[in-house]
Length: 141
Image 1: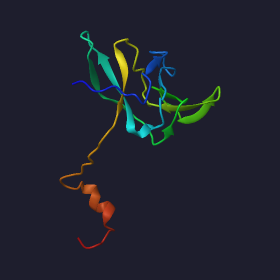
Image 2 (image 1 turned 180 degrees about the vertical axis):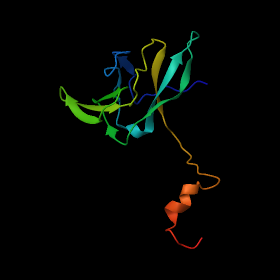
Image 3 (image 1 turned 30 degrees about the horizontal axis):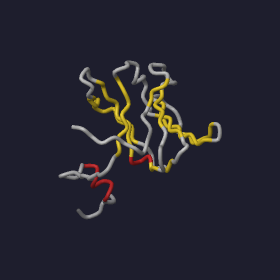
């Protein structure tokens, strides 16, 4: 499947790939965006030029508006999110929370995706803990 390219952000680049606590994905918004509408997906570049997403390797952003000339920096390791400035430009630093590096191989690349629509599901049967949380002890069932 071919998706149209994103024009709201620059292409993501990995800095210090394979270096624990320094490996990070960096990109810039090209227009005002809410980061919560975007995700970073880890993919493997195939010999034919296509990319296959790796299962369970997605970073979801928090709800924050960023606008040029900002920087978005996502460290793959553990840390505390921070919004700061560098040379007068906003820098939004986030952490993936992984215990290992993710981009130590050149074929493993970050892909930024825009989340366009969602459908929230539920349970066909409520989990056993649901009743305990909803009804005070001794209440009629």
